Length: 124
Length: 124
DNA sequence: ATCAGTAATGATAATCATTATCATTAACTT
DNA sequence: AAGTTAATGATAATGATTATCATTACTGAT
Image (tube, rainbow over all chains, first blue to last red; front, side):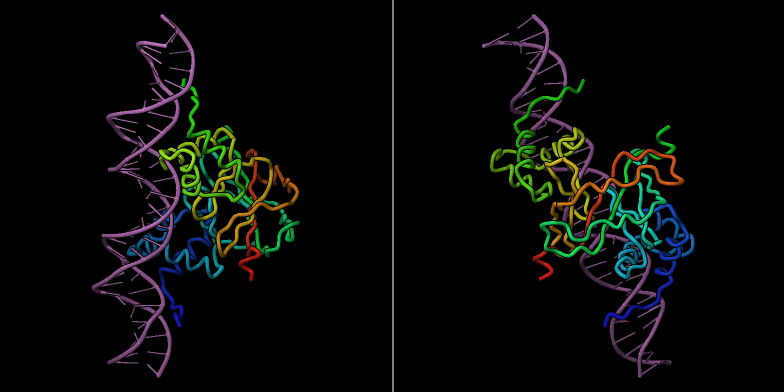
């Protein structure tokens, strides 16, 4: 039970994320999707971001402040500018790191690698 | 100006983090430090965690839910259990990844690598 | 040692992001 | 077309963290 139904709101959120590359916050997505679906509520955006993430259709990126979202789920890495807090994609290969560290009896199923520094604009 | 003064509260927060290895939340630190300095306030814990982090004496680990803190600042990596949300140290070498990706004009000064999966207890 | 200046504290209100609630709307099944 | 219930919109509630402010207590100079 709890069958998934179609909703234009969810479609609009997903499409918005798939068409942009700036790793928006939930608020950013809300403001953008509002243009296509003016009646949409911020709560609906949060609901669908969570749902889409659990379906594996989008990525959530925790950053220390507001979470960012990414509609492109292929394996890639991100950079956060310490100054302007912008999040960028980095063009680097999969680092595929260790999966069986010493003295660890759990199971590793994934990793996230975030780079920090100054973006071209903020480094002056 | 804004000279740093000594405070037993700050000392107690730092010492607490240096003596433990469980990556506590601010609340965890508060409850623990309260035993040594019963009058300490949660606000003071947050204040000093932020200050100590900016001094480079401790690490803050964003995890998607409450931030965790680490009193051991040598280069090492962490694992988060998706089930119980525990954060563990991993015994693996520095991955020292790329510092000059293609098509990137900023400056990379650091990275954080977090592994996900199930800890030994939660994998049953 | 005492004093003055001001950083740090404790208590609590405020903020911000996110989640929960609930009455209403709208997909889907028949 | 009718009934079931997932999804929505509006908003209240929550949880983590930060801001405020009156009071306390370091510290450097007297």
